[in-house]
Amino acid sequence: MRILLGVCGSIAAYKTYDLARGLQKEGHEVKVVLTKGASEFVQAKLFKYLGVKEVYEYSDDFKNLTDSILHIELAKWAEHLAIFPASANTISKLAMGQCDDLLTSTFMAKRTDTIVSIYPAMNTFMWTHPITKENIDLIQRLYIAKNIFIHPPSEGLLACGDEGSGKAPDIQKVINCISAINPSIDSNSPLCLINTGATIAPIDPVRYVTNSSTGITGFQLAKEALKRGYRVVLIAGKNATSKIEDLAFLPGFESYRITTTRDMREKVLEYFDKADFYISSAAISDIEFSPSEQKLKKDKLENALFFNQAPDILKEMVERKTANKSAIRIVGFAAETDLSFEVLNKKWTRKPVDLLVGTLVHSGLCHDKKVSGFANNEASYKFFQNGEIILDEIIQKADLPSAIFRELEKNG
Image 1 (cartoon, rainbow, N blue to C red):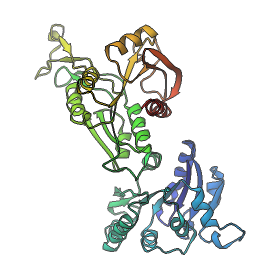
Image 2: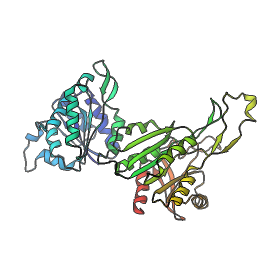
Image 3: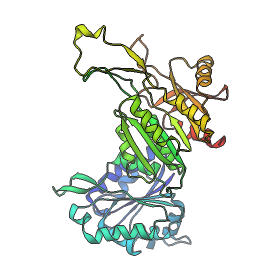
Image 4: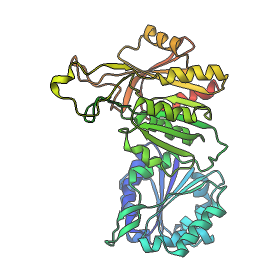
């Protein structure tokens, strides 16, 4: 994606070095525009040392005049305009339509399909001032149909020593937001229901059985779905990655934390009939215990660990789809130590989903095997559809969602 990063005069401006570098590591092409205030905190040449090829200062629109007009060219080039940190002064200019520097002129010249994300950062009293609030409201009212998203600041210790709201969001959170934001999502957008992470089977108040799933795959699926214009309901195990909260303020996104398989089933049922897609990427426990109310003593454990089969949520949803003659498209995940055709075909025959994603996994805790599938950035995957393997590759988890959605949309 072509990202134009607008940097304003705030102490948080120093974080934009990491932001620019992080966006480039994600594969984005980045250009930077500095306001006059930003130039007091950061230097254009340092961005260039970090690999940003083009960095512009506030008055560059009026220098080196050629046939092309710089703010128009930048507005045409940018697919996403990210303003971080956004100062109270620049927010006021955007609200009033003032064009007295390169950044504000580029903002006014942006195309209607260009996404704009704004990340305010300032002292708490400046952030909560009625004029700032009015300016934020005005931007949201005026530009509601023009792909603009304003991320609320975080709370914490500010540069001035005060505690409160106004703190710039964490850089990784901003990167995740920029990768997923689609302000055009509304209540009529199709709904993608995703579950992710591990469920827990309690034994007693202290012990439980779970697995190593981190929920990263579901997090990446949620980002891809949002980017493609879907509303997302993400149901995650309680210990799944905290990155899920990075998406909390994005349009069309809801998330829930659950503990047990039965908790997961209840929440999936709440949304299943409303969904257009159901992607079951969670590592759901297939056993459950009758947990003891008191911690079990060692001498009681041997005769206490009786378990039952937990609800098979995916199987139930496939049967529900068939019974209701629903058009929902279902993706199932099979975490297996053997991804042979026989294993995948047996699983698909029992649960005939629209797409079965087989993942080669191993916890690394037995038989001297390396960890695979869980807690890694890549895994070995096989896509199984209509009785045949249609993909067999090692894929980065960040790239897996686009491959899944390509198949779903191709066959939708």
